[in-house]
Image 1 (cartoon, helix red, strand yellow):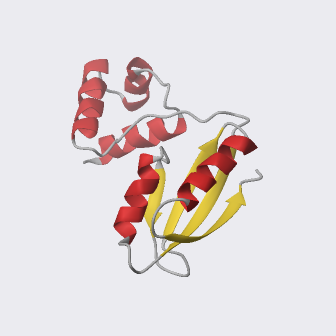
Image 2 (cartoon, rainbow, N blue to C red):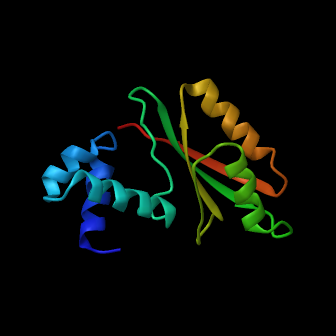
Length: 131
């Protein structure tokens, strides 16, 4: 990955809907060059997916404590299988941190209950994003 790839990623992070033509104009490259680079970034898994953020969605951080008898990686994988996109194994008082996006409070509660039901989960603490 070179400086141009880093610039492409920076542009996509700010505006994932930008066209390859507009990106090419910004970077002084051809549309084909941008298309090829983005395709390679996806193939190399530098870019894993494109997503959207919904304006009035509920966003929360869920900290998860797990039992020593169940590997943290298995608990994290089970959370990912629920459809939670961002799941990280961390150090500190908790073992896993999840960034949960939900359409409303009921959906958030449902996701948290599903996380709590996973074998090995012993504790959760949730903080909603206010702004």
